[in-house]
Length: 293
Image (spheres, rainbow, N blue to C red):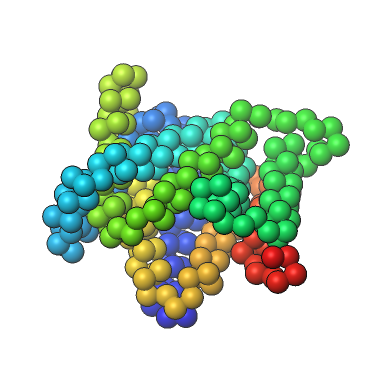
C-alpha cells in the first residue's frame, strides 16, 4: 500500500477514536439535534474551504442544478437522518454500546445491496450477518443471552437502525460518479437548512453553553469535515482499498480506552465480545471464497 495513504488513514482512525467521547460529553450538555447542527455547520465551513481551494465550487453548482433531487435525498439520509438517529442512540446508551452497534452499517450494506444493486447474497454473506447480529444481541442484553433481558431496546433499535440510513446513502452514491468533495459539500450544505428549520421549530438555538459549542465544532471537524477529506485522499492514493478500509477497525479499541479514561465509562465485557462479533462478521463478509459463492 502507498505509505502516504496509510498515514492519512491512520490519522482518520485517531480522529474517529476520539469522537465517541466527544459525543457523550457534548450530549450531556445539549440535545442530539443541537449537537448535529453545530457539527454540520462546522463541516460545511471546512468543505466549503476545501472546494474553494480545489476550484470545485462551479462543479458543485452544476451538480446542484442538474441533480437537485438526488443530492437532497442524499442529504436527508446523511448527515440528517443518520446522525440524528445515531446521536439519539448515544444519548440513550453507554457510548461503548452505541459505537459498537454503529459498525453494523457494513453488514446492512451487504444486505441492501442485494435488492438495490442486484448483487448475490452468498453463504459467506449469510454467515457474516449471523455473526454480526449475534454481537448486537450480546450488546443489547449485556451478555445475559438466556434471559434475553434487553436493557434499553429503543436505544439499541436506534443504534442498529441508523445503519439502514448510512448504508442506503452509500448505495445511492454508487449510482453516480461525482467528485467527492463537491458531492460532500452539497450533502452537508443541503442538510444545514433542514437542520436549521428543525432547530427553529424546537427552539434549539437558546441555551447552548460554550463548552457544547466547542464539542460541536470538534465533532464537525474530526468526525465529519476534515476526517472525510483525509479519508477520501487516503482512498485516492491507496493501491489496495480493502486493506486500507480494514484499518478503520483499529478505532474501536482505542475509543473504548478513551471512553474509560475521559468519560469514566467502565468497559463491559459484553461490549468487547459484541464488538468482536460485529467486526468479525464484517470481515467475514469481505472474504471471497469459491466454496461459498
